Length: 317
Picture 1 (tube, rainbow, N blue to C red):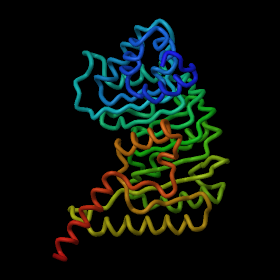
Picture 2 (picture 1 turned 180 degrees about the vertical axis):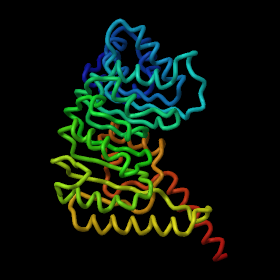
Picture 3 (picture 1 turned 45 degrees about the horizontal axis):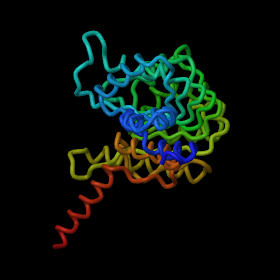
Picture 4 (picture 1 turned 60 degrees about the horizontal axis):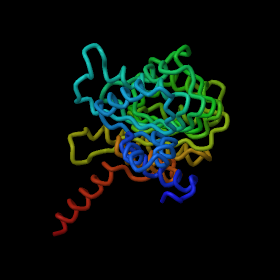
């Protein structure tokens, strides 16, 4: 291994160093050569799955004398952890991490809904995300976004939001994000909240109607819309199920009129497991992730489908 070319070792190390830095630390103990080479990719891909991981990683960032380059960042917290210190919240820790890494980030993904992390907190962490290409986030507060909060994202190509989406409340904030990301070509809206105006709003925007409230990017190539899953074995009212079914049919009718609009089957509830799997597809395998056509069925949908099969099998038997 000591005689391997640096380029080959970098390729190997980049596939190993996909955690919070432990793999890079182990590599650095092998030899000085391994230490120096692995330092180039040690923190290229960081996946932080708890408030504890975030706090430890932030402490490491603050202790390092040189700037840490992280290209791909995944953040998740389930909201059950104790706050790091009195007066310091997990939101504060997230903001500090993103602020430290904003200049080098290429992908940013994660689910921060449980800690009530907002788009305002995300955007106030940096005045610009110069390299960011992929934003795949569960967040809150799109209805609170103002033009003074939005950083410039000159290279953002793909934006996926999987927090509950209400058309009327979120439309202004959504438009501001589009305005500050001039290269945006892919948009995905998952888990929309039975908004009866959504089909008409999207149809108007895709027709480039000047009176449309929703503004879509000029270079839009793909718009994916995914509803919330209907659980037939729960206590959801029949009218609600019929309403959602009607909205999905309207969306499908709109999709037939417009190239570039993809309405998924009524399988929804995109969650953190979907987000991490598809983030790794993009980062590790240069795959399409959540942008595949047709989209991959979500984890919850897979379980639901299996439950339907088991239930029907029981009836047959």
